[in-house]
Amino acid sequence: MGIFVKICGCASASDTQAVAAMRPDAVGFILWPGSKRYVKPHEIADWTRDWSGDVLKVGVFVDESIEQIRAAADQAGLDIVQLHGHERPEDCTGWATRQVWKAIHLNRALPESFAAYAPDAFLLDYHGDRMPGGTGQCVDWQDAREFVARSPQKVLLAGGLNRDNVVAAIHAVRPWGVDVSSGVEQAPGKKDLTAVKDFIEQCRSTD
Image 1 (cartoon, one colour):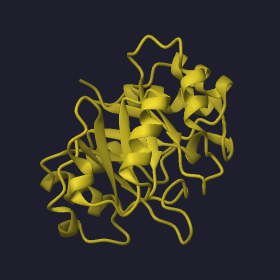
Image 2 (cartoon, one colour; image 1 turned 180 degrees about the vertical axis):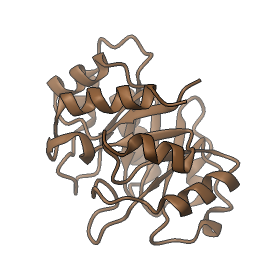
Image 3 (cartoon, rainbow, N blue to C red; image 1 turned 90 degrees about the vertical axis):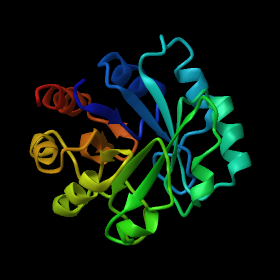
Image 4 (cartoon, rainbow, N blue to C red; image 1 turned 135 degrees about the horizontal axis):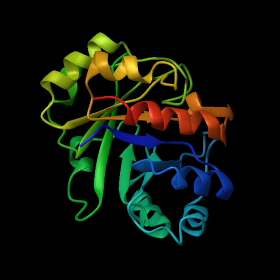
């Protein structure tokens, strides 16, 4: 299997449908109201109503209650819940058929502090001064590679990726998957579809 590719931050029906048509493994939506890419659960449900199911739907949440996340995930029809805040280890388990990913910010926390977590996958991202992701800043690839080598869980690399550096990042870090948002945008919440296409093609070309 090749590298898992997630295109995150889709914020309109047209972008969602155009990106899904390019067949990434997953499309991500931001359900954190503090983001310029924020969308509501019912919008995701409307935009993805006719999907065949082979492109996974990921919802990104930041410090919401588990009850709120479950309700939003059910309404949106999400396949995967991505916890991008200060969630506890127990928040990553007990989700039945829905996968849970946990974001880690290596520039703010030691990897050892996540030893008790057992999500379906970790996602490595860069935490900015005001934003927990989508900053366009790269994770330290050496730190990321060391984390990948030690992690019993699958690991996605995010943070500052784009069509020009993603192949180098994959070779340097050797993650299970990659996640891009701002690196394929014209503006926050508006995708550059040519950049999305190029990003996916670059990922599919790696071995």
